[in-house]
Length: 303
Image (tube, rainbow, N blue to C red; front, side, top):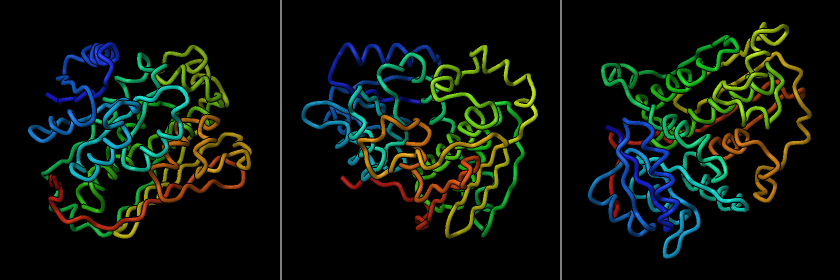
């Protein structure tokens, strides 16, 4: 049973997050009141996932992310952010967090984000063979079915993990970046839905989302995904058949103050990949992750 450690100094918020997680019967939930207490828990038993608030006394969420990234690189961390904490979220993602959920969207997003992170597994039956792989090239033509996106990201994560090109956290982050790119291509490109529409229909519950999936020209559009993985880098190119957008309007990803004006998917792609390149019309994006291969079995406690 996957174990999730919830870290928050506010008892009310811990209870809220724990209650949401317990809606999934397959999760075991543990708690810590601050970052220092969380590190003590981690010393004795590593959970499958840590969920932490950003703003806490003694050791805040940003410091906790840094410590976990250094000591337990295979343990993913998801942030819970309050309004106005975009700059801290930017820093925490850069330091190694794998995702974040705004407090205002906990009920809608938390469980799916947790399930998305916990789906990363390695098929050991093929590990020795895949470790010998020098290059991986695939091209996918996806329909407007969002159920195809997560398996694609998981497939890529399996190959990255088995090839030992980066550690577990970066493997997860690369897969999540690809997933966000394809979701953006589906919602904003193929279906031409705005950012608000994506935020409210990401569970396929929106009437407008389903209507567009069944009507031309939206239902006829395809998303091409080219996946190239070599010993030097991973390169994912995602192209939709929508009208694109004005690329010049994208905020400078190095300026955290501009994050609140960008979509969540764009923020994650920028934080997780070494380069994000759009074509001139805005209907194609290329994500690049460069590798410094990790030793096999690297995952130690440096404390």
